[in-house]
Image 1: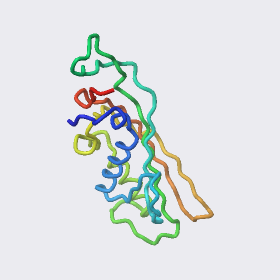
Image 2: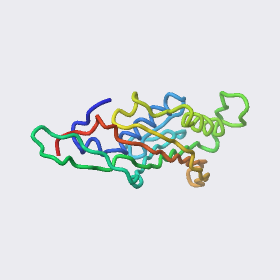
Image 3: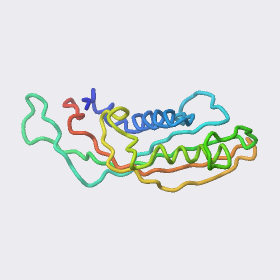
Image 4: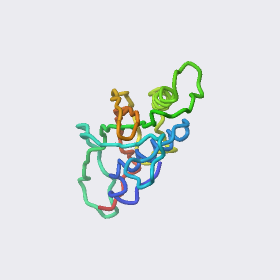
Length: 174
């Protein structure tokens, strides 16, 4: 586990989770982009957005800085967040699926996303999230849509993620 350089780096949950989710999707064969990127997106893409929710009502003691007097400070360390993955595919895409058992490329991409974020697979781990430990990932529904002006079918898949800041990730500097 890594030690965060400072609290700014440690509390940037969104950047860390979005980068990890993008890596997970890329490994699964899904073309993914962090939604706030300035890249021009291809017609087939999956946008990644992570939003942090409320802290869970549990506190941890922060590590003491050398020379810090007692008592040590306490801080919230467990949170719930929402990972939203927005799949977009041009409706007229002639690309066939690569997997048996699905009727279209859209259905295949949707299934690959769900497969990649199964709880049993623990997609978030030490290799892609150095400061946090995910304790639960739960599918949280989806919303389908069609943008007629762009001729694009879309699906937003949501996952609720419960995570904790690892004890050895806390910096001792303010």
